[in-house]
Length: 446
View 1 (cartoon, rainbow, N blue to C red):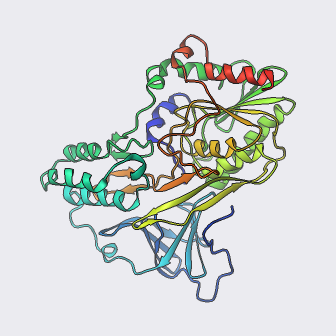
View 2 (cartoon, rainbow, N blue to C red; view 1 turned 90 degrees about the vertical axis):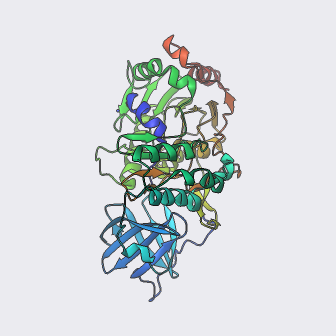
View 3 (cartoon, rainbow, N blue to C red; view 1 turned 180 degrees about the horizontal axis):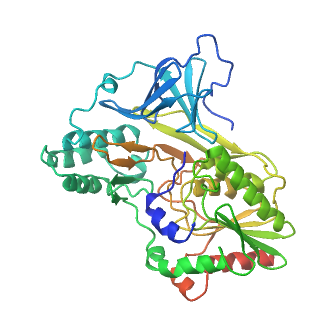
């Protein structure tokens, strides 16, 4: 599942950024009764699925609503439009993609509302109710943000009437979301977009200085090589130290319709080329300060270029209406033709987000890695897009990630080993404090 905080999308575009398990995985051989035919409900994620022959229909559901999401013809168990593969083992539905997505489901009747068209899709009361209930049953982080969602209902529901306008409803829903300063939350109504998380003040204030500096020093300039749609760039800093810039954890492929597997392959090939070019270096600086995320599968594959043994990358569990699914472990192993196990200095900032944070979770446990910079954004979850009858869309964090040491870094961000504040003003003066701190350590061998 691709994801990165909406708050970063425009800013980073301007920068031209251009498995062991704790739950059963159903990996056994299907029994004669293991057939997709019929209807299912997922454990978490708020989906109902109906299979009829080779046709599959997916619906977004709450306890009181059902809206059609996507449908199509299965090809060898895969719905190409969504890059999702469906199978049944041990009487349980498994939904997977070529990355880290692993959704389980149980056989269950399709909710009655799924067979009925919405009679008044623009009804503001109906749209408010579906929006509120989707968060109530699927959002994973209320406790971390200290928000009583039931109290928010009591506060805002009375303000919605059948005559509430679209502008008024959008404003009200935005106000209701405001305390959830989660970089993954977004509400989209046509051209109007609301995200309760702001960019770090220093980054936002000095963006006009930061962008040109990054473009001229890390994505361009003498000695800089780029690959994979400018997602990866590298250069030799001196005889001892090399530098690699990772701009995203997605969109490495030249094919705009590329699935996760193709993205993993393209990302790995680009990083392998960089590591080959820098193979004689005694240390590397690896920069994910401006990386808004993408695919966890890419993050784990890239982390595999820096380890010599299989390790735990992170754990996650998914919110359900009654709690959470069992926790699931995601591991990474040595990958690619070579692994760089000499010192690596990983640079992070307050705009390092999502899958880039999960990359940081995996990397920070390696004995050869030192994290330098600032705490990351603290927005790690996958973010499904949900819809309202009136055509609006919204995203919400449905999972809780934990580090290999079982610490939770949602909201607070992942701390660096060596803290160096991001200095936006310095970029305008031709200096990058975090980079300089890493280079000094790399040169000194410490």
